[in-house]
Image (cartoon, rainbow, N blue to C red; front, side):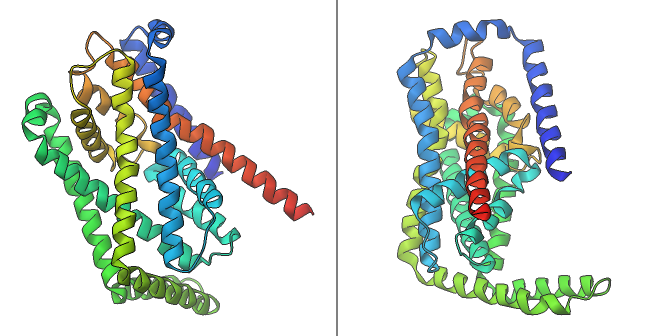
Length: 335
């Protein structure tokens, strides 16, 4: 029932967003625009998304190795794409990590270890991208303040929210006692309504695995730096999609660094929006952030191309991978 509701929400948002775009723009020109774009640059934009998936999978594989849970690259790629798919169809991208925990468990990685792997992956990526955006914001301040004056409140709000979230997570990450206290408090509250004694041993075992894994992650600074570099490449590939869409449409009035800077700040501005895959918010923000660059009415077509590559490709490719993995598991169960 919950899965059907998620699909209904996503479909409703897609229809609503499509209606708004179609109502305010001449979408009939889109096929003509597609026929005229530079195929090489458009291919580079799609390749950026592929490398975004590859670097995300490498990040997952390397983090799992740190806690002695070896994951083949192909399995890491599948799990990463499954996470992307569920993140795209659930509010706050909340379905991605539980789905990944489920499929990592099938690879004989315990719930405690998979939870710590995904938390560390999230911490590294989100910290790197937040710092990345702040550096871009400072480095390109004159350009951004001149062209994105109206968007500055959204940018600052996004950066502050992400910085606070990272701060809270680091506090939990660095102090195991806080996590244990929160978990014990939750168990005490639940035990008032339901007997939790039979679950306590399992929960404590998961927590012990989690804290052990976290301790190992704290110790290996060299690997943490390596993972941060991978996250930088992943983020740059994702933000670079817009630059190649810009070039594909025959525009060349600004540099790649300016477009990557703006795209990273757009990511910050919409990352806290609760809609699945920030659907609706991303489209609107793209129009606000990039209308001064995609001139001659091209901004809506650029936005469509960008979202096809950055969002809808995750649903299509991730959904296909999810289906294939499910079918493979079903065959194993029958055999």
